[in-house]
Image 1 (cartoon, helix red, strand yellow):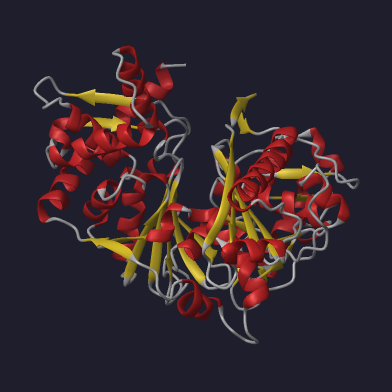
Image 2: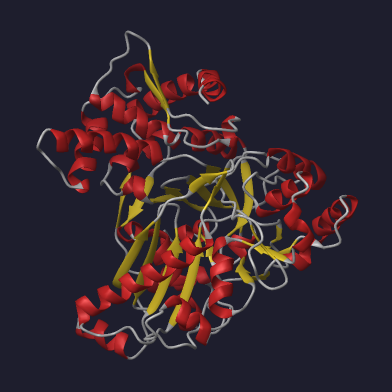
Length: 532
């Protein structure tokens, strides 16, 4: 405690803030070791307006300020010291999406998040144009869809960026983006660590055909890799982050990153043949490649690590949201019965039933936790669905196991493609909300992917901690020190974790579940078409 207080008072502690789908969290660390000193968070939720998933600009700023205020309050409570100065700061957020601005920096259309699936036509046309997979979530898909829809705001468009890029811009007055997040805006050349100029030329021709004068590279933020200078916290940025006026300006800031990149850092999965799975509101697997994939796969994104290595990304829009809703039902029942339980107790009780009192194939119980569309399975919209045959073994354990298994259903389909491409994975690490109940999500995932799954003791902090580590790398790295070396020799030198191997019965059970999952997708589609 004394060492941490000295670190805080000397202005050397490092802060990472990450904007997740349902929570914004800040984590303050010791930059030399990565040890967590303090944290704070803010709960928020996206909204569906005019058919688009969005957050309002004032909600973004309010969430940023409340998160920082709560970190500072935690520092004050623990150490009796004000948070006046930081050694470094980094911002991360959910990747992709679309925030367009005019020449004065004014947001000229509603923020479109990664969750929107209205961009299918644009995604397909761009993939055909480039011969390179351009997912629906990517920022360029949103831009092109706006062009196809002839949206009025395009006449004033001067730039667009992601959520992390927007916040970083507000804090530093620099329009930059970490390469991992930039790779979800427009294709990246891993050799030059910049946008693909050949693709930019092709897209500029399309832009001109649609009657617009802007060029894509003029609209995009500058690409930076981990460890590069991304500016400093301005006086205006300090007041925006901390309206109380206590925080001093001049803090070095690292490149803003996406949640996929911070997840790789948080699990030490930035080296070749390592991989991680981030499982929360959405779920994605990131596998660092030895070589580029041979074929074009619409289910696989081609992105990068924060230091620019090639990554195969399998992304699914839906993971734990409907699972959490079921837990909420049982929370309500417990309260009504006079037996209120903490979240930890409730999740532990329900999740563990999926291991101790369930059939490996969920006993014939099938569910789809689709709150939104799912590209991998061809769903433009989502309808949470629970279905079973009359003879199914319908128990609490099988209900919970089905909900856990379905949260991994879409990602499993994508990972099967990588297996066929002979992609090698030496170590797969899990992090995110699915793994908070010890051993359960980890076991289900090991069976689902038929591979050993590790969960590190640091995984509970997740992306915000990973972002803080990237900020620490900015100021702590030695001359020429790579990000993998920094993580291996400093941050994860003494890291502990647990490993779960796949179980033969569990693997066969999940395979049986997946056969039903694929076979019954028409039922999910029918629910979308009929339940409006």
